[in-house]
Image (tube, rainbow, N blue to C red; front, side, top):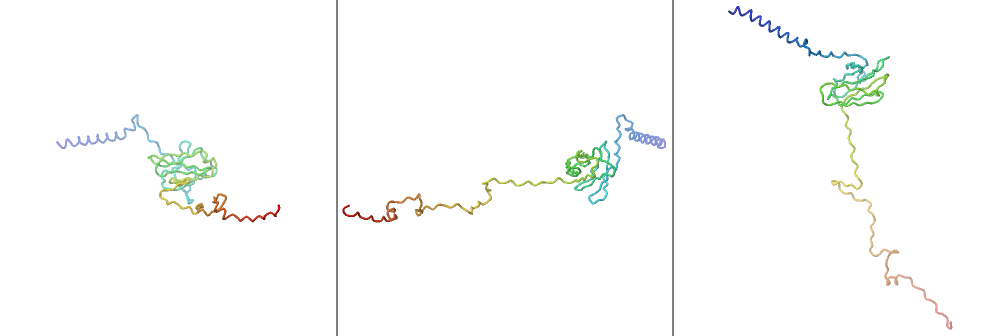
Length: 215
């Protein structure tokens, strides 16, 4: 009996393997099957150099008519210079690819300075396109820097005139205004003199000569 069942068991196993193989390959023939997008082809349009002058190996891709410099693998702080090769010009559009949360901002210096903020949340890399005013067709190089966003300290508020902090000891005026001491001894046009004092202080009147007799 067992010898008869052995060929049947082998046949069942072969059919099962065939069905599993068909199930793996079958999605490619389904009408709604969508082919995965091919990976972008790396190009070399500009020369990249690190801060120490050594060659940098960040990928470069074409996305339609936009040259994308891929910096999605960077983090922390750093810089790279994108120099234009001889007898070439910059494309119409240039973008920098970064990963959200890896850096906080991208700074690009060419014909003018441009600072691009990077989102902190997200999974997929994003392409930050440069403004057309940052570079011209014959701009020699673009200097790209990434890192944290600088924090600017706010200036302390200026206290208003006459403001006194409750934690500060009141200050004493070193030059106080002179105070008047009216003790009755000062003299002046406004002083009141009694008649008795006036008779004592008034100068003596010289005696008048008497008239001659018979006048």
